Amino acid sequence: MGELEDVRSLVAETRRLAAERDAVILAHNYQRPEVQDAADFVGDSLGLSRQAAATEASVIVFAGVHFMAETAKIISPEKTVLMPEPAAGCPMADMITAEQAEAFKAAHPGAPLVTYVNSSAEVKAVSDVCCTSANAPEVVRSLEVERVLFAPDRNLAAWVASQVPDVEVVAWDGFCPAHDRVTPEAVLAEKREHPEAEVLVHPECRPEVVALADAVLSTSGMLRHVAVSASEEFIVVTEEGLLHALDKAAPGKRFRGLCPPMLCSNMKLTTLQKLRDCLRDMTGAVEVPEGVRVRAARAVERMVAIG
Ligand code: 13P
Ligand code: SF4
Image (cartoon, rainbow, N blue to C red; front, side):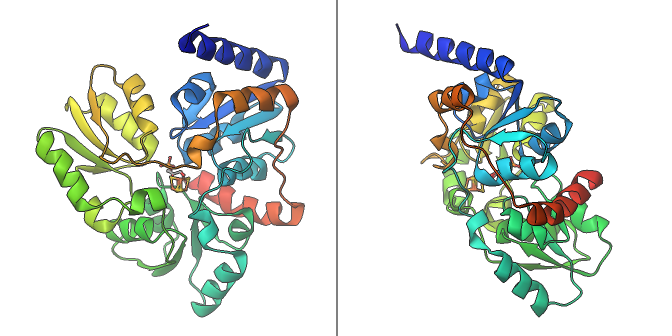
């Protein structure tokens, strides 16, 4: 059997198992192409949180990293939430603990803590509200305060500060290794090769990279943008898994990643085989202690209500 046939039959088996188990498969935009193709929904952190909240399936299989599956469990505690690869974590989420978040708040009394969903349930539980890269400025604006604390991503915090200039944003010093290592030179080199291309940058990149962007967008924001943009060519400054989803969103348009490619090794830990095995064996259940879950849910639900 050829490789393509193998992939097709694994996708078919995965879909059959999902139907048998009353499971919905959610996959993040950075997942491997064949994992995206086996999913019911592919999206960004905000879109997948919404799908997790809305689904009627009794099982959610989350192809992504741990904080995403945990967020689904926080929102839908009555559902079984499974991860095909439970070891897939997010290094940025690990850059702040609940104790550190408490100390951050204690050092700035009165300022609400806005926490990026790329964080643990324990950190969410001590936060006032969550946000994603798609809604961070909107969430901060909605608080109507002069000063906020923002964790864990210092780069997303800088982007928010530039979009909401009336609010002082005190940032935690975390970052995404895949996005933070991008240099302006790497973007400019690509731009020299493709001068007509529109530059799309994820706000987890450093401010000096964000400054080169034609548009600063979350992954699903990029997907929506390329479908309506008059441009035919784009330089895509985010994890390379998005290129597959972009090709599907706007067939015929040209998408250029950076050199070397931007890779999140944790996102690539989930394979189609692991997804199939997870559904077959019903393994990789994600649990959140109820006391933590209830407090974390307040911060997540407040975000979902804002937008
Ligand atoms: P979005 O897909 O929400 O833009 O997030 C990017 C990310 O790094 C998820 O880990
Ligand atoms: Fe975390 Fe960055 Fe990977 Fe997203 S791309 S999961 S922020 S390490």
